Image 1 (cartoon, rainbow, N blue to C red):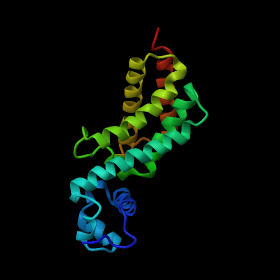
Image 2 (cartoon, rainbow, N blue to C red):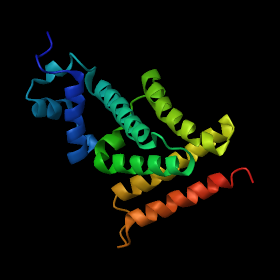
Image 3 (cartoon, one colour):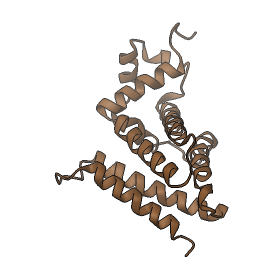
Image 4 (cartoon, rainbow, N blue to C red):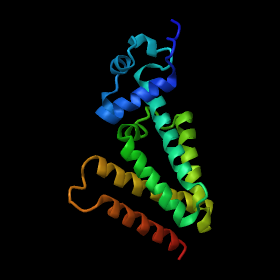
Length: 189
């Protein structure tokens, strides 16, 4: 079967992102995606290998979009300013694309080389931004893991509606990031 004119992998991933962001990542099926794209389901197989293939491609696409967001955020910045900018970009990405953000954690095989390559590119941006702190390579990875944990924890709890008190979430987030940054400064003490 030949590919449909006007249909390509990028168009498929953008449509899947729209479904994920509006209805939830678990609502993405080949049938729902085909309906959104106004194509027959078999047409999708020219670009993806079934639902597992779509989930893998969507996870990689999400990781790549996160990479773009944090890379743009840190241009010309280092140290504290870079960590704040990356953190804000990360949370903004999760808020803007809640379904796509969730999809980044749902790759069928996180050990897949393509998934690992995309993830490494995100890690590399963070590690480069941390160079201003004079950390060893190993220390930079530990700090990167900590930052990811902090950011993912906040973004996930927010997405699940876990912050029900009426206090400003951005104030809480900034306090969290500032506290983490103070911890980086004290890392070698």
